[in-house]
Image (cartoon, rainbow, N blue to C red; front, side):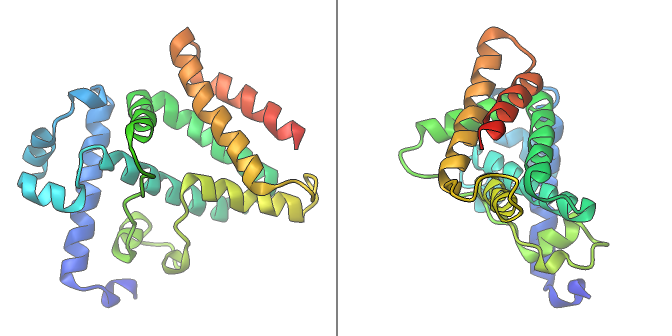
Length: 212
């Protein structure tokens, strides 16, 4: 069993990271990300700020971890449902639209965090113990690849090319770039014009996919 391969330290660290993320997600349902303070999370988790920053050097790094976990959960869901190619890409965006509506301040702050950073931000990794905690009853969880959002899109666009759903001569990097540009643009426009973000995102992404 996977649990037998993990040390007590690995299991405790994984549980703590999952707890911090869970508490942050609960708070995000009630508050804007700017109004959530590290000390509040620490109080709920019964840990010190030193412990918090050991795992998340900045509060905003919680957002990177949030998206990493979300992308991993989507990967497992796609595998279980045996979705691939364009159907997988559309599923990813359907779930992403749900995420944008449920955690709108988180997504907007994440965009701001990337925009303000002077370097490319690297996501907080998901370790073996965290995989098991997320999916304790999934036998193949150890082998599951952890992909960032853009790499997730790349994987299924490549499948779509292989399955001749889209033109083989298409450049995958260009396609991912177009999708991501449209993704973040749609989110900002929806905010500016007070439009339903999921509906706008779906409309714009489908329009892009049709050009492939």
